[in-house]
Length: 562
Image 1 (tube, rainbow, N blue to C red):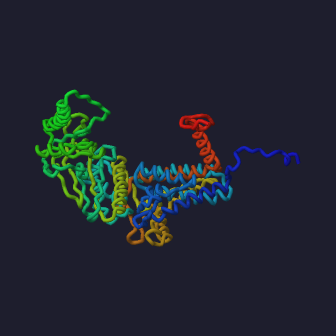
Image 2 (cartoon, rainbow, N blue to C red):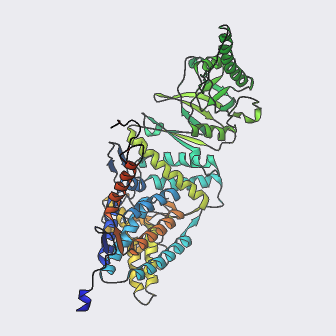
Image 3 (cartoon, rainbow, N blue to C red):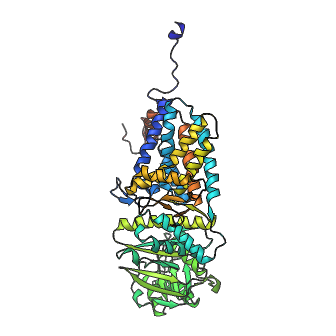
């Protein structure tokens, strides 16, 4: 009776929403499964695309997991974790973003019945982490190295990896064409880690096969003044001067005031301004440069001056394009025209202005340091070219990773089935509940081949049974077998050149397991809806008290005398 009469302890502010326990955990699992269902159908070569229309009226068509996850305005706190892992997978390895979201959703789905039956989440987390460690060790064991091959062989192998990535994209129909282009671009930049050294320029019109790779730098013709058309548009082995200064007549930046006692002195001031600009232009010409590029404006006077002396100039060049020209040509960007020596000038084999569609491009090719490349993309609709650019970004990332890590595994769901078989076998050696949890982890990995079949319209159960039987062969010859998208059966993924870098799978399984364990370890959500409105009121109150005569009755500036 005494216990019943004790006063209730109020710990949190009134209106605070707290949900905890098993119901909260199940709710989080359901939210993550719902998010995974959104991107489920985009997996694989026969995956569908999503059209996303945002509040600003922008339309994006994509089947890239990371892009879709970014554009979905997810408000559920637990489901936001899936957006984060998709982003991290995209920035780390570039591909496998849909895979990582699907695996997380499936791990949680398999955990749900255990949670509902009263299993403690920490038991599940422990088993999942152990299974993850075993899976990654198995991937490393199954991976095949491409190290020690000649450059031509390596190029061929990397093109296979790029083609596997591109097969699931909108430009999958031309995957061989783009795969070799991507490999050439990545090899061109060598060991340079900066992704922006590969430029992608988009020009609407034409078809996909009109796209081309420039072993150097290409950028759109910048804004130009009269006199531009009189300049030569092609040079062989030109010297290139890169500037970060304006070459035009400018009025004084400060509010300068000049007092003259004699009106004839005015002319000397005007002449001085002209002499300054002519002096700058003269120094540019004397440097021996035949191509002058500047990040800031090159005015009409300078344009005509250069045209008269057979020099090409372009002003207002984008910062990243100028940086890429500097890296490729071996030049250095100057902030002054004084003391220009030969060492700061860049060079290339050929500079030309070329018409691409209805745009004109300045193209620098055959650059000496060659640490840059530009892909010029053509295509019909703007959305199509945008998606092609995202697809190429994934392929470029994959080729860079394969070059660095140089081990590949069989794609098409083969590696997932092999790990699944291995974990099921391993689970039998464990006594206790852990056996069930590792088994459920192994079952979750089968979601990849199953979804590949579903998206292609095949009978998933039938194909998975064939795969299980093949992978269970004691000789181990079935390990590289995955889903054959073309025939609806199974095929040796290695023989069909469906390869992916092992780092993609390792990263995906790691990230998916971490995310699943993180969501399973949350048992309470505390949400204070009033805190936001309270902050708003505090800010409004603080603003009212500021300023003269704002917060109190007194005579401030501009107030009428009573």
